[in-house]
Image (cartoon, rainbow, N blue to C red):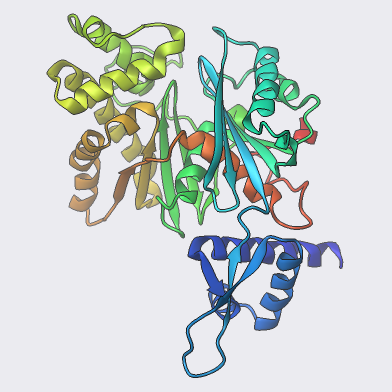
Length: 399
């Protein structure tokens, strides 16, 4: 088969796998109808996927008067992938099967301000632990969510992580991974545009179209940090004033809490570089319980996010927005109420209906999304070395 034919067949295989995954089980006729291709095209593709062990026969559909259609299901044990996230104080791995179901998870500690070499050693140590039976290297691939602040060290980090690694490797920035984890878990629409806003040490934006990121690569993530929300606000190193990160980043939330009486002491905040995420979660949980000082601090940050997200998404006609990140996920009801008041209601006033939700993917949307990234990239037969369009993911050999 020529190169063009191989690409067409591989794209068909990938589309069929996605349909079967989404439906749990379906027939060849239903696949043909949804894809708009001939039954013969589906038949040949299904044969390839059955031979590769990615699909399996699952009995027959109920009779409608004629011959009963045979049903297809994913062979969820045929492929699995690992997602990796790097937080301030730990490296976390999540292993998922072909359906995206969590199969294993582990976290190993990192020192303060870890160098790429230390992160690489931690990853190799974690890989030996996530599958004690010694089958870690049977994984289809490993995806890495590049965290905020690693942009300048991205190439060095990837070299350290992939040195001696026997598993195919691919990476994307944390917001893109959070978006993929949310989509794969069914939190986003199957078609159209959906924006995911990931709020942690930095504030990033990822836009999915039909479940695929429209997103720059790890070294140039789509950041909301320097979206201006107050022209009279404090000066920023970027040359502007009142940038979003000065109001809604993890550091900004904690700094405001530290200036609010004894709030930091009362909540037991550690106030260290490695405790940014955990401190924000404590503030968010207190705000959700109704603690007035914490509520003022947290709602102010979410309000700033609402203003920035409106600026970033309204002109694009995006009708679905998902928020992720430790603080957001710790107080989903309060975040939802604030976004409805400042974002959704604003859209309704202009005659548009916008869905805003908070991701509840566990244990970590970025880890699950990074594993999904590896699955999407490597699970299609004949495309084990495939990379996505240049600019948002890098296969290991391209580092």
